[in-house]
Image 1 (cartoon, rainbow, N blue to C red):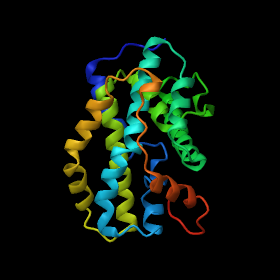
Image 2 (cartoon, rainbow, N blue to C red):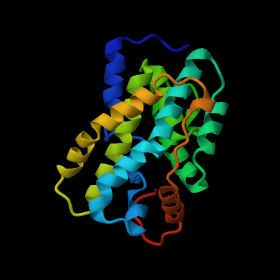
Image 3 (cartoon, rainbow, N blue to C red):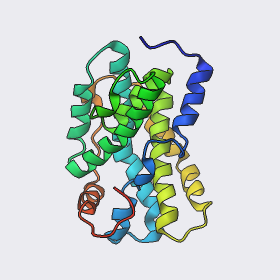
Image 4 (cartoon, helix red, strand yellow):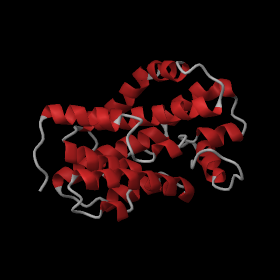
Length: 223
């Protein structure tokens, strides 16, 4: 049985999950930025790329996490949530990358849970795996949605520093400039409860770039 945690623990849990030093393997991801740049995205368009991703793939992941958290709280199976996420993530390459990152979160959850469950062998995409951690730590749906948005923005920003000549303060500026749009995503998804309600905004170019990246002969990031 999950032990009850204090509000302070939940708040600290959000900060820990938002920390880039979290040992989940997130450093292997670029949030699709590397394949986008390899496909010809101008470096000056990285902020626009971030905005597009936030409105599409990030929104899907934030909504998926919130709906998964609701399922965990009500004792409903996660399979419908995972299937809904997969239907909105057409590329099997992108899905595999999300499951790979999810495995890192599940390893962390197994450690926090006393190692009593073989969670690292489960196949859960990142948003569902993060929802499992949020449930364990007592994190609420709005904070979870904001956490997913933050993680995506920071993933792209950290990757940009390795892929593009930048002042390290530049990605921080990008993130702050998107604060209002993050708030909009949180408002849109924080009260969702049904898998069918997960939005399905499309960004075909982003998906195709990431799909092709799997076969790139030289790359720094998994996806």
